[in-house]
Length: 197
Image (cartoon, rainbow, N blue to C red; front, side, top):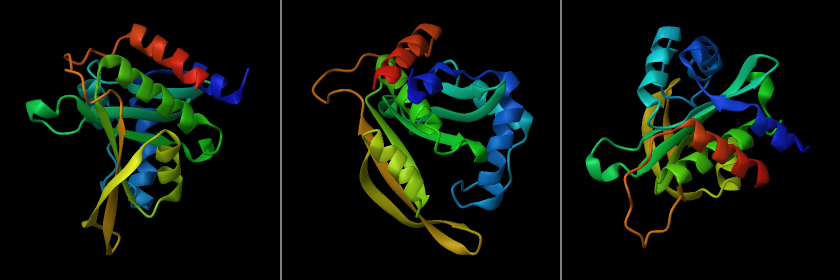
């Protein structure tokens, strides 16, 4: 069995019980980097609210190894207006010790497969620049650059640019149905698809 298949096997839907672990993974990105534009790390209760708001409409996935959450990926609405409902934004964060092990690739491949199966049309990723690792992860999954918001955020004493990448999930020449909820069946099918990519 390949490392990627093993990483996919260890992916599951997040639960509210994961909120503390997810908050701990995310906190250094907020405190120590410009990757997140938040300035105060959310606590366990705030993270639980975020998970509850996303599920079951959209995927929130965790990777678990040795009984410990090592990374997570999720999708949220791109915008609130009704006509945007087939477009989503994706995010991914890994524990400091979980980089370069195929976990991010497995999480994103599973997330994107689930979104396709749910009937979403397009997914976007916003990346604070420069960030070669995140750009590489997105482009390896098929995302393409679509533009830059120059100096859109101010953090740690400097203005920061955010680049946007996009990926088509469904053809443009078809009438979309309403997106499906995120279910265990969709997760299972998405994991099978991700393991073979």
